[in-house]
Length: 520
Image (cartoon, rainbow, N blue to C red; front, top):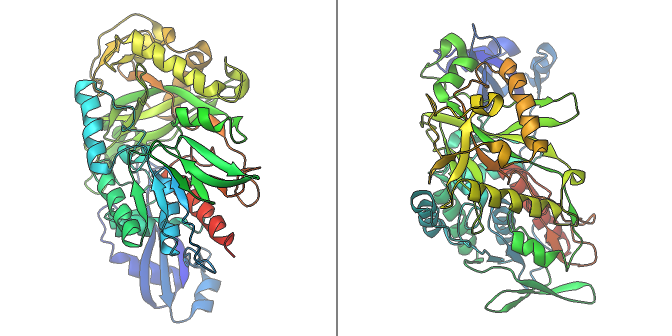
């Protein structure tokens, strides 16, 4: 099979023309064709079109490869989770059922190891109700919310599956998500997403598959400690019982702060760079016009997105993250008396506003608190200040971009804040420290030059965005185990080894593979 790249197709052209385009490029008859990737090329606003990568079969592969510079042998998507040499009586435990824990548990279940999953939050259906109570009533459940529960933090976001990670496991992960009810397009879209309305159901279907394979998922079961003997793991402590285990994949997520407090006394941990800032909102129609020009509104194009980054003269770096086209700013708090924000989009991405995190990169030397958990304590401080500034009730502080850059307190204009339970007009410079706000203020005009209208005065800033990634890292050995605790595998975003749904899922698979390898 040949992988053929850079195959153009107009917005109004039928995909059946791809057969002709492939034949013309390879100068031979094409006998089979599959779309491997589809992307929008909007670099020239006068010629917005699609670009495809195709996997094709031909009669004379050697000749086609020699004649076409965009052709190469197709990579083999042949990943399958490994099978252990034997099945021990001791069942492995997975703590956390976000992307890392979910795919670790799936791999272990497919290997016949019948994993036990401990998840502090609730199942997808109950968790959805808890999330809606926070958004509509301002009532927080500290154990089941946007951060905790089936699917992890990613289940109530846009469900973006694009990643900077290059890994042979990625096609397999996408195939499993599609088999569980995600749209088939995620297997070839250049920027795949599922949507917050579909993700809970997909997560529940993967859980049912794990259970059908002999695994077990225990909800409302938080990890309270670890038991060890002679440097080896022997048990996982919960409120109900101590679960005996000699192998445990620790995938608690980036917001399990009380768990971090327990773990830092038991295993090596270190502070890690991360980023904080705000969510910025624009009208989605304005982003579409800035990205697509005269092709704005074409039915073949979905809502436009963006990804921006810059470095200021003082060396500070600012960037956008988790851009949600046609979405909403949502509450992401997991502790009482604190406010933080995130972004979410439904599968159709059909809301009026777009939003993205606008973040300042921060290093441990920036933290005003010392110690392993210094970054975490800084997050808490800013979230408390935001809660108080907005007047409680999990309202969030917000202001216009114009007010943030130039002063004054103008009313919101064309762009209405989408955050629920609601916003309170505040000066964000009184909530966030100068190291963050000065960087955001310096970056906004630079981003406006890259994306017209980004710093428009009627844009909305809502804060704080504090949970972009974990503030800690848990070191690992070559076997992905925690140093000094054999059988313990720190995993995913919470352990500081991933950043997003796909990289977390891949890290879950890597930890499961290492666990399986330890069985011989």
